[in-house]
Amino acid sequence: MTPAFARADHMPAMGGHSGAMHPDVAAAPVLELPLRPPAHRVHPRAVTWWRLRAAAGVLVVVVPAVVLLVLVGSEWTVGLVAVTVAAGAAYVVAVPPWLYHISRWEVTDRAVYTLHGWLVREWRIAPISRVQTVDTQRGPLQQLLGLTDVTVTTASARGAVRIRGLAADDAAELARVLTRTTQATPGDAT
Image (cartoon, rainbow, N blue to C red; front, side):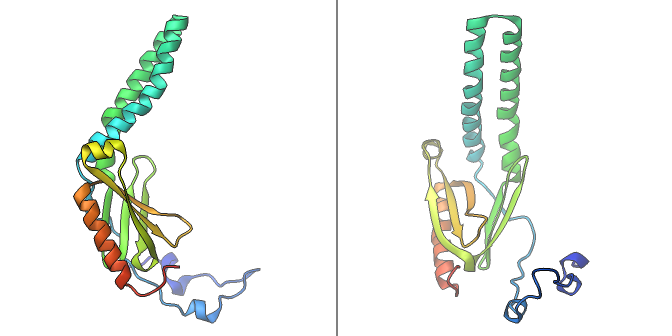
């Protein structure tokens, strides 16, 4: 059952400075898209990719702490290095598998669904009729691991929808299917 706050018959009257909606806008059909988790996980090698990126980020913090330890050599710098290394190692070990567990994607003939994020989760649903471009991207680590990101640019102020960590072949097929589907979908994606 739809909650009362989400049904049109329970919407508050448009008053104040905005006034009532224009009849053409109020009568426009609303695209009903199912609100559910996307069906597909990213490729398992994405965990390795995320770990390598996290390790590089940890090194950016650890190296200056070690330099400080060498230059100053006091007890607090030893503690700083120990805490930095421990926190960084915990992040590298724990977060990528958790991100893999959460990150999902799905494309239907009506929408692109994504779910991503380990601390702040972003759940995006982009109607196919709003898709403008489909791009793939492979950084050096992704090329080494055979992974690709797919970016779906939409006519949305929120920005593009990204599907991260797909196998290269899956990403190429997804881009092909999305391009074919959006070409067959009426509308101008604006």
